[in-house]
Length: 187
Image (cartoon, rainbow, N blue to C red; front, side, top):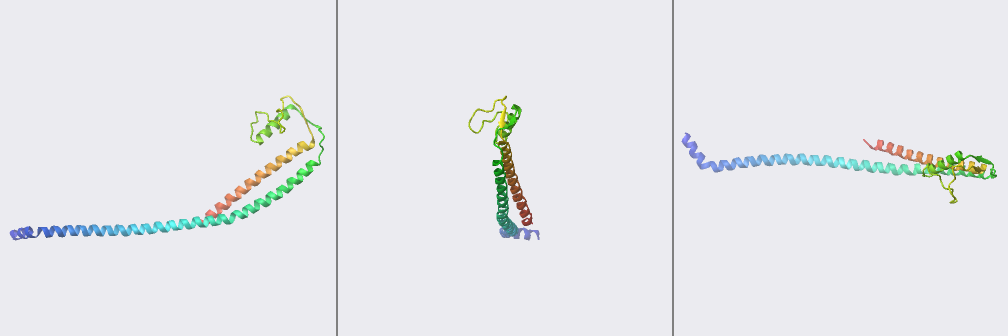
């Protein structure tokens, strides 16, 4: 019996080997098909996630675009109202006395010059040159101003400060609106 099995094995071994190779190949192909199906499912999920992200970005951009004109309009209205108030202040400054009757000592003149330099982006340690291109104020010089000069300086400072505050509020409104829109769009 063993001899018959050995004789059959010798005669049919190429066919058995071919069957084994084909079986292994069949298993490999089935595995590749499963892998391909899984890969296609993953690709479909990734594509849907990408499409959702693009849609969120589009929705967010549309919300931003809708908010910007409202915030800009409010900022322009505030700027116009402030401009009118500052113009009124400047007209009132023009009505003040222009007689040089207010004296400031050297220390006050230096502080005034340094404050002006700092406000205009300069260095407080270096004395600021007057607008007319004259020499800087000497350390010991006393200076005489009129009411209009002093109050005009204060009104100009108030106008610059109000402009900065308006810009701050506009930036904060833009940030808050953008953040609120982002929270609405983000799932």
